[in-house]
Amino acid sequence: MLKCKINIAVYPLLFLLILLSALPSYSCTVIIAGKNTTEDGSILFGKTEDDSGMEIDYLLHFPRREHGSGAYLQANVTGLQIPQVQETYSYFLDACPPTKYSNMVINEWGVALGSNGCKSKEGSISELEKSGQLVDGGIGFMLRIILAQRAKTAHQAVLIAADLIDQYGYRPSGRNLNIVGPDEAWQLQMVRGKHYVARRVRDDEVAVISNTFSIREVDMNDRDNFIVSPDLIDYAIDRGWYDPEEDGDFDFAEAYADEESHVNNSNNHRQWILAKALSNNFSVSLEQAEMGEMPVSFKPREKLSVEDIMDVLRNHYEGTRLDKSENHRYSPHHTPHTICRYSTHKAAVIQQRSNMPVEIGTVIWRALGQPCQSVYVPWYLGTQKIPEVYKKKPYYRSGKSQTELMDDEATNASFASWHLNFPYWKHRETDVNTASCIFHALGKLVDANYQDNHPLIRKRFDRMEQQALKMQPLVEGKALELYKEDPQKALDYLTEYTSNQALEAYEKAQSLTIRLMNQ
Image (cartoon, rainbow, N blue to C red; front, side):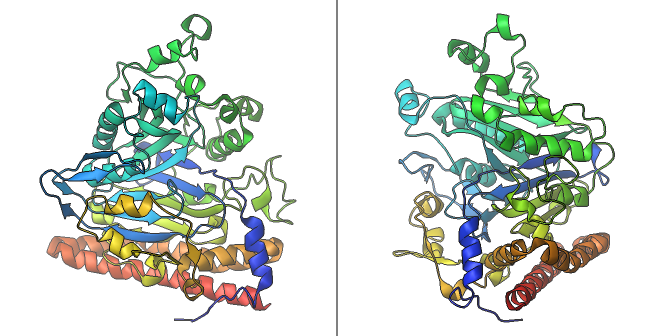
């Protein structure tokens, strides 16, 4: 393997580029395609993670665990403890410390969870604690971990979440939690306190969301497609957020979303371009979108592929009046409100198929850094080993190590102790060669001369990406044959294939980084 250490003393320009990019963004974008809208009948769940642009991502795996009678789980930083179940399922965590919410989770059953922050009109934590809507501070980030530990299906996860919110309340101002499994997908939109609505993504539609609530119509009587807090509408009326006589039919987003966020171009432009890029009949104009009139979903013009979702997550408004890059003369990542932007540190397309074993049918196509400057690598759910450069922790802290905290059996709050009480850790020079750091550095180097550098890296990465997509039926065909003979042989095969793909991507990124540094 090619060895390289990026020393900021030797490459001050790179260091300056990284510092200049470290501007908060918090603009995660999600698209979910129902199984009848896709070429292969899969549910496709695409998501970007956007924060400051300085984040480092890595993969962790948590095995199944047995818990003793009377065990509890720490659910937040303020001390809320909830009863633990007897057995928790295994899951992968796509971790991004020190952020508390830019972390996707997928468990052994293929239940995938990832979120969008959505500011609400609700009051402060202290106000809701006084009113009883938050118990000991309520549940925040740990909700997705609890669901991954306990749910076999997306629907079951929503029911568990609703029960927990009814008991303890939800802590952040507002959030959309996407819950996607091989059979169905849901979007759970939660308001601080005990109010929420979950909507099933229909099989014939594509749902999109940025960072404001997107669910509009709510049918309180349709339990197949909605799971709703009992007093959702009455509470909105009491708070003066909804007047049936003046406002007509209840609109959840209109009633509960923070008004400024609901019409913020950072949100509505991203939702609008997703729909315009994939639908010829999308009738909402840009001006209407800017007024907060985006629907929860749309119908695509044709059946969608994994590659279609990959491409749309690389969008910079090309071909529209919103594109400010002058045909990529300048880096498009500083164009306001793009999907792929300077602060994007990870993107994924999760392909969920229910017609084969979940270890083979669930594939996480994962791209580190800005997806337009990166390559989507297929990670099969059956993978049993993560290459060191993808799981190595590029940070340090005093006291217990991450491994000690995560493996600590003395308390059932080990994960919460590590993640919820997270300080800002420091980069360690010897660890800058982790995959996330390499892709991050490569993206900044490309941005310094986007017009010339971007075609260079795309030529290398496109070739690899296309080959992986082309090989997918052959890889899975062999895995299915092995699975019939012995499931463990199939898992060993998928582990080797995934590791080889991930390491090839890492080595390509490393080589390109060295080339751009030295040109």
